[in-house]
Image (tube, rainbow, N blue to C red; front, side, top):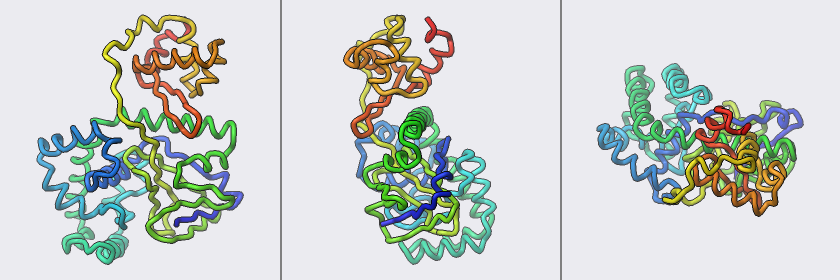
Length: 327
């Protein structure tokens, strides 16, 4: 079990990452390649990524260079997921290249004790090998992550909207209570159970950065070193992959006041009941219209507990920006 102990000050310093953390997504996507668990949730990604890695000539690099550094369900070095990754891939890779050799040596020793890492990992203290690592991570990101960034951004946008909705109605403690089935808010402690080891982290006013992750599956992950900034990577809720019906309605069917009102409501996130109120219709009628909007690719809907939250897709946002939402 992992336990984060909050003070009153920590509750004011809970943040949610506003962008995908490029290096965390690399790390946990490499975990997905090491197991069949949850494969249904990533079916389109699996179908394309293995081919993409082969075409890019990266299969051997991934198998012999990257996977040994990112073992699934075990320790992997904290320096591989620096906080700068929230600023984008370039900033994260620069942070890896700038990591002091002493820290790398310590973390590689920990990796070796945990899983018996290859001997070459100790040479990561050398700038040349670390440069090769940065190049391999960039190439992997280009082949395995970048083609799916629009989907990832869409799902993270929906998660941020959900958190904003929760903060408005239930505050920070409501947000902490709704992070997922393995994360439990028992004031003033946030418990993650199950977790690979037993640890207590006293935040002592530092706050906590929550990083929603597309590729993280079921089990949240925290940095191993308690001296580093406190972060918690947690998985987004996944639903089975579906594709729009072949007879999905064309966009011109959407040109009407009810659907326009629901589309506008989705810009800030709305439940079906809220969308119905905004459009002046019953929840049953609103549910029909959200289905049409969803099939047309204008909104996305995510269920959390007993609530379905509707948010805009990039296409829906673009349509609103053209002025359609005011018709």
